[in-house]
Length: 216
Image (cartoon, rainbow, N blue to C red; front, top):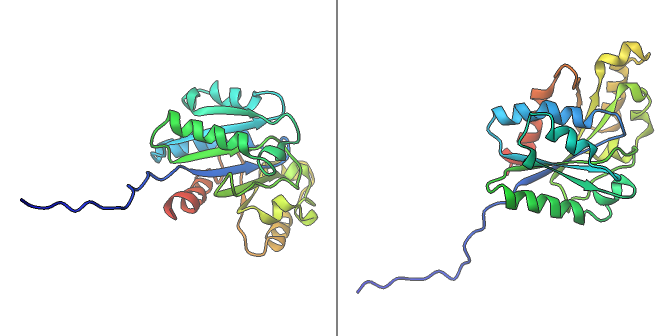
């Protein structure tokens, strides 16, 4: 009789979904960027879900759920109840649980996007929560934002300068603002976008997928 050798090694678990964060001040266009990313990720066959954060509402989650762009069960909300950065940095337990629940509901999930509630330039993500994160600012907030060197601007894996179409209307020298951003980030990438028109959204998707899916 042929003997069968049994391995003592535990079976390899299926890899968990990659997790990314999108942070930035109120009104910079985080949700609008996600709305633009959704069809791009769908066309590329990415199995993904979104977790939004607000203080005491589910406003952003409801906006996405009602958009018709994505299966509403693939969007959930976390109510921070305090400073928005608390639940993405100091104690991301609620967000971790929300991401775990999305993976339970949607087997084979490849990517979970965590949108922070609107926060100031000091907002950063805990690496216990996300593998990679980007920080969004917009030209209407002022061309001095990069020079203020907030942690979000300096430490994020990608800095997105959104609403570039507004630059001539708010007296912003866009080229100088982007130059300042690249200067303070010491080689970390900066991307100029316009969520309203879809400018650079394909490039944004390329950056995200290369950083957290292809690398894995």
